[in-house]
Length: 190
Image (tube, rainbow, N blue to C red; front, side, top):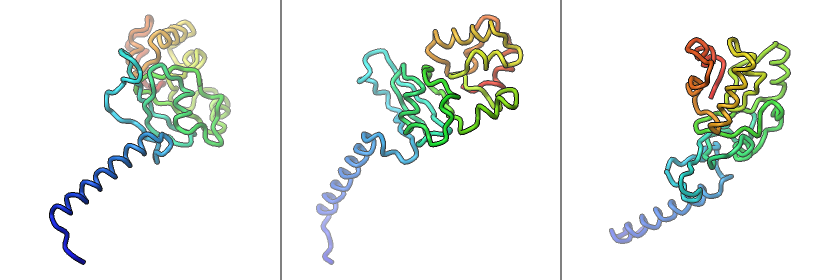
């Protein structure tokens, strides 16, 4: 095999870099080609959204086809995140999650598996932390120290702010003090 000159090596290297660059852009733009579901780029490019809007980054977990972290346009709903994650897996309990809830940045959307709602109902309550982004008034009312009035205030606060990215934001709700915040931190997940 003949030796390659320095200029030939540079040309081959440039071609290899170009092929890698084009391949990476193709994979990123295909949307369905992500192996682990992770489709987040942390570049602050929102030119397609218009001035003043930002994307939200959400973690979709549980009984979906491609769990992972996804970037979605501001104002997206839980149903959009699940669709981006490939849709519900075969045994997903679709009625146990609020598909119409607005997403907030940093939120985790957990799609429960089969029998999850029945198991929690049979046990007399929630089996784990409640998702703040999709909690109902009834679920919030079931938390110790939260009555129906405060549960409704939390729902209104969440709706007014387009969702919540942190449990700590509930400190701004009238009627929630430091001891209630500790209870909420243990019972809720963002």
